[in-house]
Image 1: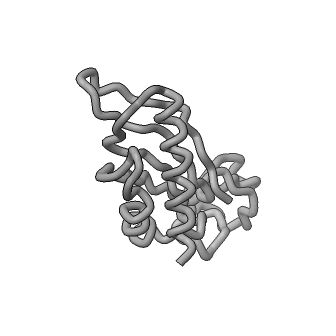
Image 2 (image 1 turned 60 degrees about the vertical axis):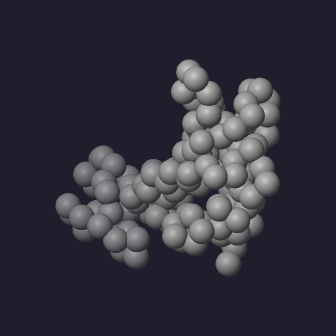
Image 3 (image 1 turned 90 degrees about the vertical axis):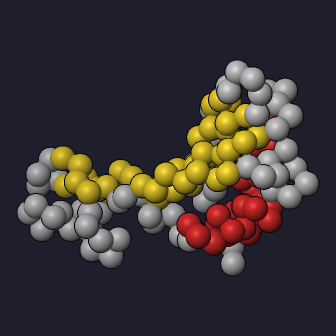
Amino acid sequence: MHELSIAYSIVESAEEAARNAGVTKVKAVNLRLGKLSGVVKDALLFSFDIAAQETLLEGAKLNIEELNVIAYCPTCNENVELPSVQIFRCPVCNTPTPTLIQGKELELTSLEIDDENEQEVTNATATHS
């Protein structure tokens, strides 16, 4: 299960960003996850709790925004959402759509911290390939 190593990487990046911002407790980690990222959402959620133990993120929630696959269709000259991760053809005109616009992301977007002001640490971006 490679999701555990990814979870450790996310926790490490988030903890570093939190420390750099002077934060002592993180309530939530916000992540963007593309359907072609190769990461199983449920396994990552489970692994995150393990990886966060004894860190500033212990007890934090992992919020995952799942991103659909979007590709550019040269015939329609626009970005289209693909109905399946296995068929890379435009759903409108059936043209092959090899140019991906979205769907492979694994991006830490922000942290929600535990303080009176309910601030958010943004640009704590970490990506994993």
